[in-house]
Length: 232
Image 1 (cartoon, helix red, strand yellow):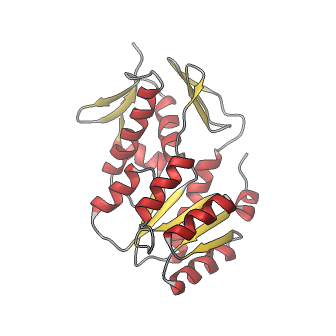
Image 2: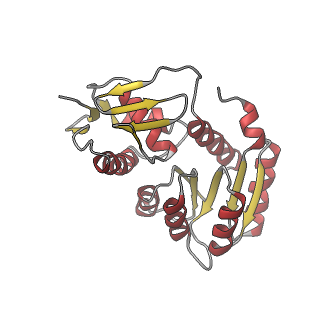
């Protein structure tokens, strides 16, 4: 079972090149019991990510040395540590591109530090699983273990981000049911103000991983509704 003890020891890497903003974020995170590390540029961020192995990365997009999207790309090439993007760019394209690369959520400047902490807490809880002793979910070759936060296809483990896992778990709870984008957004990103089409980005990535594992027809798009898991 995930308890508040998890948040007391979780390490958050704050990647922000504006010292004043970084200090505010660290102050609020520490006030809620998190440990923090800070990086002011992309290269330092990657070095700290590899050395400190944080539980979550709070990643600004506009960085010197390496920009945030490149940092995200490299983090995703090495693992599935949860990442929340922080951006001053208002364009949805930037947000969607980051999500397509594997970010779990985003916040836009100017933001409330309390909101950022709430997002951190929510993403960490999703990445750590939920209620203990929950039943393993099965749909054809797919097996989803909510307690261990592990999904497998034909006994081969899928390499999923926390948001991808939560979406897959939601779909696997009712195989054959067509879930709307709004339902999936509420299940996977309940504290986020993300647009419904963000679900499409995450499920596009999830579909690729299912296809690579040999379950190419498992995730279906239901025209005019949303998505479902389907086994003939």
